[in-house]
Length: 271
Ligand SMILES: [Fe+2]
Ligand SMILES: [Fe+2]
Image (cartoon, rainbow, N blue to C red; front, side, top):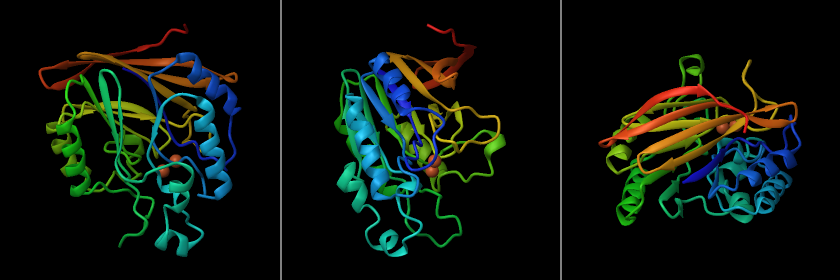
């Protein structure tokens, strides 16, 4: 399995880089699949959706994407409440469960965005019991894959420094159920910070944001490449420096029985 994981493109918001640099960097790596974990657009405008769709099409590589909270309008309450996903469906695709089957891996994506809730912060996401059941049902139908990946925009875990951002609602209930159904790796975005960790025996990895000028202090733009074979998995984080992406950090994981362990992290060498 070779996946490039990018997130939070935020088309419509000022960018730090030429998107052609991102495209050509991804194309040069020739992955099996590109995963984009939400916030394709910044304000869910039609123009932003068009740009997102064009970027994905011009990559010329299989991709799987899920929505983020910025992909529904915050400026048009009628649109948000009554037809929040019309533009996504028109320009990108399904907002239901999405799937990709590679030779030795399978990926399933879910929409964790909620258009409305009885709480202040509507950027928060949620995973419902029904979504967990859908994932379980799908994974039970897939056989012979060594790696199983779940994609969701909102984070199931955050480093201490970013705990001011809310975790996905119902995530704690979902984690053991996802692990029991065979999920190896959860890919997410939302906070624009790269990290990886192990929770409930699964690897949780966040790609950061590759281009947008909307980053926490001290964080660089970047994305992740993920390679896995049987019971070993390596996540490399690439950062934008001098108008090119260079590998910065490698995290190696190994699966022992049915749990993943972090073997260690090293500084990556430029190929
Ligand atoms: Fe974002
Ligand atoms: Fe977000």
